[in-house]
Length: 606
Image 1 (cartoon, rainbow, N blue to C red):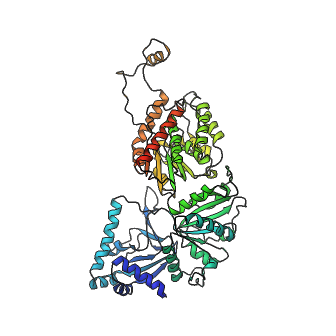
Image 2 (cartoon, rainbow, N blue to C red; image 1 turned 45 degrees about the vertical axis):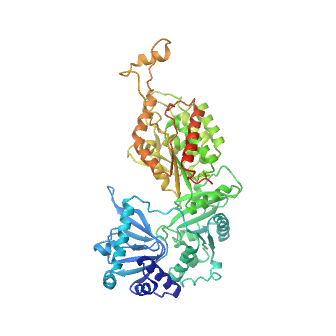
């Protein structure tokens, strides 16, 4: 492989930094390695391959995949990544045998390969090289034992692909550049600017990987916090290079256009087999509409990791996209707790007043309903007013029925959800998800698209209280049973920080009787003026409390994995009593203010 002087200097710098040697010895060491370019999407090696070499990553990024077996066929699982300055494959080389994991290039990557015999020869000349490689293995094991995250929030190199012409992609790139450049160094690259910026020529064929171009693009990335590369379907060589060089591919479309598939989409160049970087859909809207219908038309048949709405009349949408790219986006998780969940509204109001921008919302049970409400109506005062009308005036806990399947028919709750939160999940201005529980399989289900009312009814279908919901021909019930505070689910979204609000009660309550009184005694105490009154929870409250107990330990552990945990004091309030609505909201407001003050506003007030 031909290596120009600039690329050779990059390789020597990588060896010098990794082995901690002066420039002269580094140049000599490079001579013992073989330069290798691995195209984005290609496998460097697979799990089970013979471990006959190791690689030093000079440019690019690799994904680490492990095949896991869970009662069926092996399923690949992404467990980490490796970037510039890291050695990969060294464990297999040192121990012999087969690869314990597979490595796939997340982008075009430039590496230095060395086989076992050549490495043994270098170690004989300088034994310190073995100490450095073994030390790298020890550092990785230490980080894994300490539970340190392997993912890197944010996307430094982004490819923008417009479904409506390259001019649209460049316009959005310029808007993003202006937004990101307030705090980050950002460079926009287009095919027309390459020559003026001194880029090496593209390969003669689309499938060619030019080591000099990989090095040049990586050097531009090293000089800037963000690299925004505008792909041009009319220039396949350039588009191929930037798509395989990106951490994230943004597909941009105008909501007013026809969501037809283009020839270059059907050609397969954008398939998961070709590009393994994350991909997102950005739908453009004119003005500042509150309702964003028919998003599903654009998502159908296309494979995206997430999607965002960008209204040119709402500056917050562009700011959210910029925060998603720079890794500072914030996710808010709201837990289950029936009427006690009204505290979520107060907590959200306190966050907004503190200047905390919420970019992603997720929840379980009542937390799912309120999170969806905030995703649709981000103004806290308007959201609180709507919730008061829905829950206090609407009385969703009042439609008692013959308890064959559940104590409540659920029709009133269904009507209120469909009235206040219609449409599909993907149509919400703020990204949202919720969780439910598969009744037969005992597994959680993540709702990120489709009917919003159905997803919310499923997430809040407390067993025995509300009837289960049929979803994809499966019976699903309250998401709080398996994941009452879905912090880990939020971590899977492109957010850098997570705030969680846990309304599960942990109050210890003593009763003033030795055994549970009879139903007649309880009824008499509540109806007759001189009869003894017993503090016995209702059957519905006991069902709700029992469900909370089952998930309390898991919720506590999930809350500890949040960057900021808010625990409102709501133990004095009943699960189904909506009358103290304003007091419960205030409890959430006070708790959030205290949590922010104790954290020194480290949640990232803007």
